[in-house]
Length: 253
Length: 314
Image (cartoon, rainbow over the protein chains, first blue to last red):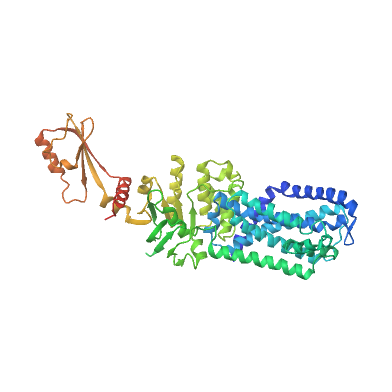
């Protein structure tokens, strides 16, 4: 393992994050605050509780997941797409590093950033509503696993994308709708039976459900299923990464 | 002295079906400056890409100081620094950060004193905290060279290093290249400025349509293929070339008729100069002055590529 190279990539990416610190942190904090105003105050005043949890508190895990998924995908995809776009990727390809080390550097940095943001959202939520964390170790585990898995997905998107539009398509057209429909703001049990079945096709349901369980011990699906599904995504992303590594897909011509 | 880079049976066909390299066999000697010449699209950059790892070969092998560049890529790539043709740099990084990043990427421990030396050698020291986007094109080129040198490579690839660089900067850069070579670094360069190859290189390789059509010591190449021209400035203008002059097929008359040029091969058993001069004397043609010039590498190169395009080199 070329640890120095991994460290160099990680530091490079974190420096990029530091340069854009204000917009990286401010934007999610502001949007989270807006969610609390709109969903918490306006809708929450009518719903009051969901699954026995105060509505404002109930949506906190979903809000954190929403940011975590978006930021992981966007950070990692941009991180690897940009060198491809500017041409500086030549240096990565000609350096004595394996593809796995490149992935660890970029995905590690992207996941770190989104975990930090997730924790900032959590802290922001505390200002608005009471938040209880029943299983802190599981909460952190879900946070880290999800951040890594979706940073891997972002990395894959960054490799696949050959234009800025494609970088936007997946987060905007897939991740956001799936998160909204994945029980970020409601319990799946409030849906009609048919839509409940449809919902369980949505992989993000399992992530949000497991994450919420670590807070309030309420879940749409059994927590072990959530963990299993998260691991399945992780393995699927690793599989695709392995294939890219084998074939040099969109990296070497 | 064994070769530091050995390229055997190397071919590259792009996904589009374009054969960029065809069965290349080439050895680069330790410590030499090797100039790779060829017209645009000949395969120079692809060849460098395969050796450095940015392009995957379709067939063949490359070994770098005994290390296969695919199966033992770490050991092979550690030895190589690459300066790409395009000015591909980060925009928002500082010069110092980007050069330090390159060193880390190649797995070397931090060495600020060494980075400082490189930046000073390349006249970049006073720009070390500047963002790269604020630098001129020539400065960016130096940054790319600094990045390539950051990990103390034993082999340096310079792909068109002086394209778009002003004369003074070019001189500075060649001084750096000479110093590197004196320090034992092997240098492979491609250039469009043939006088540079002529000035710098120990050996010359010519690539055309994906094939190496010639590899030769520069001096030998110049000697072998060099044609000389004898130019005679006439006392009185000539309207036309007298047909009975000796060697009339090798003679040409300038437009205004006051200059006669005789082209001859330095390797020929007889250059014919004595007979030409005698013949001119007989014809009563007198001259004021004479000079000889040797054909430049550029002319040799154009001649070779032209020959290759018209049905294969000798």
